Length: 267
Image 1: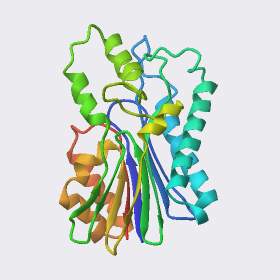
Image 2: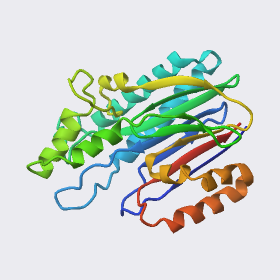
Image 3: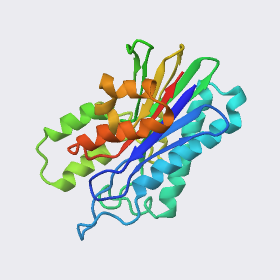
C-alpha cells in the first residue's frame, strides 16, 4: 500500500480551510473542508478561521477515536468516530461563544464537511458528510465507487432563487436547509456540533483489489481527479515526484481558486 497527501492554498485571499490527517499507526485517513464564513461588517474575512479550526478538529478527532478502537473497528465504530468529532466541534463553538450568539450570518457555526476511511483485511470502510468525497478506481482506471454529493443539488437550487437580500440567502441556506432531517424537502448535513448531522452520515464498505486506487478529497480538487492523466500520476511516479507533477496540473488552472486537498491510496 502506498499513500500520498497534499493540500494547496486557495487563491481567495484567506487561510486554507481544508485539512487532512493520516494515522502513523494504522491505515486510517481523513480529509475535511471547512465551510467558509461570511466577511465581517468591515468587509474583512475573520482573522480566526473557524472553518479551518473545525476541519482540523474533525480530522484529528476521527483518527484519534479510530486508533483507539482499531482492532475491533467496523462500520459502527466509524459512526461513533463521527459522533465523537462532532461533539468536539460543538465544544469548539462553545469556546468561541458561537452557540450563544448564533445569527447564521457573521456569527455562524464553525463547521465542516468531512470524509474518513480505514482499511482492514482488504476492505475499505468509509464515511462522509457533505461535499467531501471518495472515489475508487480499479487497475484499468474504471470507476468502482463514487460518493454522493448531497450539497451540490441544493447549491444549484439556491443559486436560481430570487432572495430579497443576502441576509435571506444565507439564513435560508444555513437555518432552513442545513441539518434539518425532518423537513419535508431536501436538506443537507454539515458537522456543526448539532446532533442532527448524524442523519446525513454516508457510511459503508467496499472490497479492495490489487492496484485499486482510492481518493479522499475536498471538492476543490475534484475537477482534477476526474481527469485520467491526473490519476495516472499516482500510479506512474514515485512519491517524491508526485507533488511536482501535481503542482504543474494545479498551476495551469488559475480559475480554480478553492482549497484543494487530497489523499490517494494505491493498494
